[in-house]
Image (cartoon, rainbow, N blue to C red; front, side, top):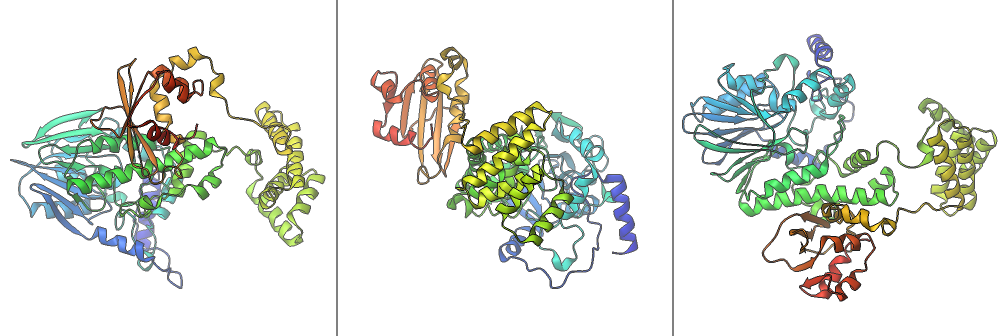
Length: 577
């Protein structure tokens, strides 16, 4: 790395170390030998980022490959509107020059879809510093930018440099999954701060072009999408791009509410767009093609969410869920769901942590061995060359209870039917619990000791034991949404069925569409469902709570069915009770 580049890196670290998308400081260490190969599919992904300006429809253009993200030009009667502005002045200037080659009309407004650096740090190039050019964004975008700059710790900087390959030598570079390369440099910041904001929606006409802006939290909480009703063009921002979404990012992030993300895509689906222009990768033309992309994308997100929640409700740990939650083949092979940016495995861990936090439910991990000490003990154990069973019992005899528990837990995985392994682990937990002054930890250790010894089985709560009055007061929405996380994908793998539920006592309809191994639940009425179930919300809540038998409810007339009783029974069998 050249001395000037080292100085730039140092300055960036000191002044902007909190930024989560940071710096192509240039250079890097000498390339290792041999050069790591590039998987052909990842190399092929680079074709999506070939540099140029593409015309999408009359008056709609997208600049691709000038930076990590895209910049979008919308031409109006007497001016243009620019959506997203790339990561810095040089990239924005190159895009502006390309846009100026299309039209000389002045910029009338800038729209920022969210706070990420590759979307906001070139804004001043397009406004030219003119305070009369509005910069439109969600009301929280400015605070997110400020938080990133002022609060997020240095670790995010380091992890971002690794994730985006900022310091890799050119021979090692492939792409960044959703763009060729991020080239952010602190000295190139040209931020134009938002001057016009909104909370949920904003309808506005600029240069004769009608805009409908919608708050659509997904990859970020401040994400907005742009709908051009007269042109049938949808700009989904970073909620959709041609790669599996970053439901969790390894550079570090707070929990991304993935079901909010799904809801945002569903709002986009309702626009019935003819063109889709994402802020990364290439546009899509044709109503059917757009609908296919949006539906597959939201189904993939929901599938990972629902099967993670289903698994954690079965007591599975994150590691166990990562091993079992895989996209069904039709989604895994969809051209917009290649795992080039986000991955299913990271998403599973992020969702688990979002619901339950860091603890995986296994008492062995409550107070794990300190890493250096664990490494030393592991090295000693390997040097001894004795079976793990002997070493676990020896550690227990030596009263090294935590290390003994860690060894015994691995022993139970190797020999899950071994009574001796289970009893040894139980003895470890009893000893660890007895030493605890923390009541929560003591109780947890001692309870799991009983479980491992086979003296106790902790069962999930039985909803049928809950008082009727409590069930009756709960909103029906929760019961309907809960169907999604009870779907058995094996039972529903070939299903494509839409059922309408009509609740007569609250005059509310829901649809449940099972497809792609997910159950899409929406509050709405459709014209021609495959089946229709008519009942009261009270009756359905009691069925869902196992208080009322559905066959008995049908026989008594509490449930009416259109579309065949056998078909409805087959549909309900997709779901675990």
